Amino acid sequence: MLDYIQQKINEGVKISYIKQCSSQDSASTVNVPLYSGDCIENAYFSALARAGGPLRSHILDSLNPLLQNEMVIRFAQNPRGKGISTLGSLLNNLNLKFSIPEFTRFISAACSGMSTTEHQLFLAKLEQNKDMYINVGIDSENTVAIDTAFASCQRQILENESKLDKYLTDVTEFLCGNTNAYSPVTKCPSSTNFRYRNWRLP
Image (tube, rainbow, N blue to C red; front, top):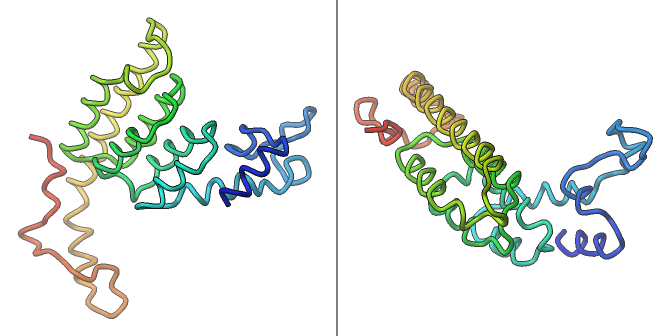
């Protein structure tokens, strides 16, 4: 898939088309195969974004540099990649710094599944060191966009935390009470000693 994407770039396929399937007819904005083509490049790109573990580093190292930041954002959005070390590794693998829109999208993507104290600390550190990850100077207009993204993320974390407080115990007890062979939980914590208490903030 990586080789195919690069081949298509060499043949003149636009980077924007790989990032997002869109109409190739300037007279139409309708995103259907008649106007957009089969979007196989975007399909491959989206498939690569679902990778986890060591594959991520290989993909970022092999991917065209103009697509790497978008892939980092997609990785951050993946529900399986919300660990602090994983998110930190993504930022450390940046070859090109984010534009302001990319940076705010990264914040939003990473934040979608955040709920723990560690996530709060990661967010605070990211905000403190934002200059390290942005490719332009931060003026007053950019500051508003960035501050808005961080504030929205904080609200999202509190909402996620509230939902966990409200539902996690009941859901876990329900799943763990299903003892048949098709139970989705194979190893259940004691209902009086959940391992999930780190979602609560001090």
